[in-house]
Amino acid sequence: MHHLKRPWDTDVALPGKAWVVVRAEKNDAPSILGALERGEFYASTGVELEDYTASEKEMTVRVREKNTAHYRIVFIGANGRVLQETTGAEARYAIHGDEKYVRAKVIDSNGKMAWIQPGFVRGGRASRPPAPDVSSGAK
Image 1 (cartoon, one colour):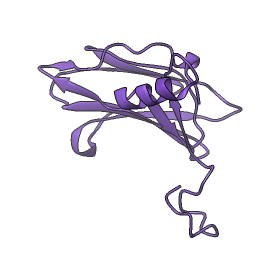
Image 2 (cartoon, rainbow, N blue to C red):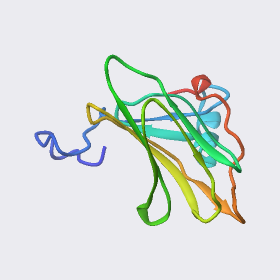
Image 3 (cartoon, rainbow, N blue to C red):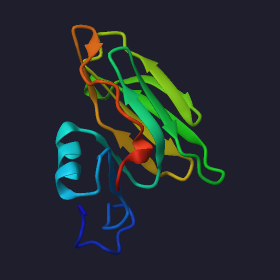
């Protein structure tokens, strides 16, 4: 919804081309807003995640594979620094303690993407608790 006045431009984010998946206990406004406030969501332009977690020691990502797409999972830290890049539908990044934060970006071979919210690293540990299975979340 960033570019409502340029519907002819295929290089911009048009309505209906991206969405947010939240981890909510119920499919109602208070639960969804609560998940958004807690950062328990990911944004996507087509890539769906099977699961992702962020703990004190690691971040993991598992993609829901579609058709014949191939996946690249990039773990990113402060100032956009690439911490690790993995080819495949699953990846794990071990927290070292000096990252400030870690987030993941998933890119498929068709150019579609998903972005996971950052887990902040304080005192050598990520600050977010392990996340529940994303498959129970609402769109």
